[in-house]
Amino acid sequence: MKRRAPWGAMARMAGRRVLLAVPVLLLVTFGVFAVAAASPFDPVKAYTGTAGLTASQENLDQIRANLGVDRPFTARWADWIADALRGDLGDSAVLRMPVADAVAERLGWSVLLAAAAFALAVLLGTALGVLAARRPGGPLDRCATAAAYTLEAAPAFWLGLLAIWLFSLQWGVLPAGGLTDTASDTVTAGQVARHLVLPAAVLGISQLPWFFLYVRQGVGDALAEDPVRGARARGLAERTVLLGHALRSGMLPMLTLIGSRVPELITGALLVETVFSWPGIAAATVQAATAVDFPLLAALTVLATAAVLLGNLLSDLLYGLADPRVGFDG
Image (cartoon, rainbow, N blue to C red; front, side, top):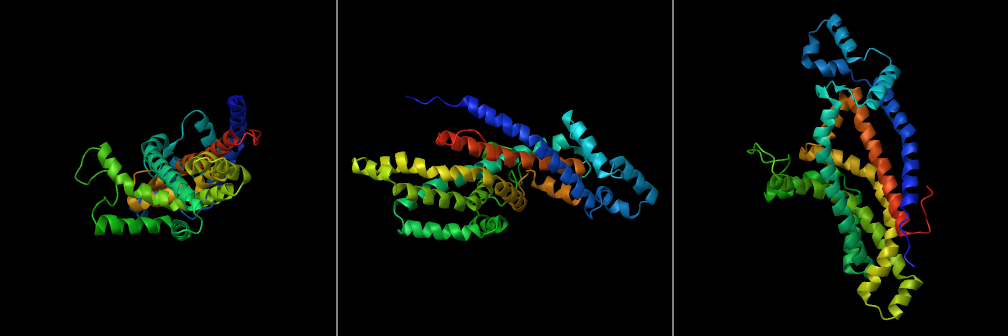
């Protein structure tokens, strides 16, 4: 009898997670305003730049009042929450534009980079993990495992600099950074694809070791289980045994990895965007942090927190679909 898809249980689980996310996001934004208020960086100095060195104290106080940073951070936080509920994320002092516009201009490019890198890490890590588990101790297993442990210790920015040196400076086959060619005035799909290759590959390779090791261990354990041995005893083809039985069982531990890798993916994306001058939210995040730009900091933190919560939810939903014994009670 065919099992019905548990859409109702999945929807209830998602609804519970959304309700729990509300206090989490409130606490996170409160923490952002509290930490920013305690920061040694002065938002007025960041806003005025060199002009602030010759400005009078009266003018600086007026700018401080205009920016609203002369008020307690709790009042600024409460006002920001009230405005955000009405769809107004405020204005970025450092970017001199509405926060919503600043995020909208950059978020799509960050999502494109992260999605391409995540797909590369999952697909390549799964393929290598299955092949390595098929013949444990073989040449591919030893080489891939050694490379995975080496890449675990390699920072994403170091991999990025190495990739630029090799593929751009030495071989000249791929652009070193940016979104389009220097002489181009328009953004074309072909240029974006060429400029995406290096940052997406670097970010994906930095995340690949964990997927490879989880799949390798999971599939290796599944190949030693009785159901797989029984499938082989029945004379099923090795490909059917590997993909239809061992991979399905071995993929379950890897599904839990998806949610836990989202924070690392976000951190890696910030570093990779900076190295490759990718026009995502990395530059805005750095500027917001150093200039203590409260509205922009809060919006970017909410986005990052929401991405982590969404990644955990997706991981649990996929695990529940793959293993009916788990259910959707979380």
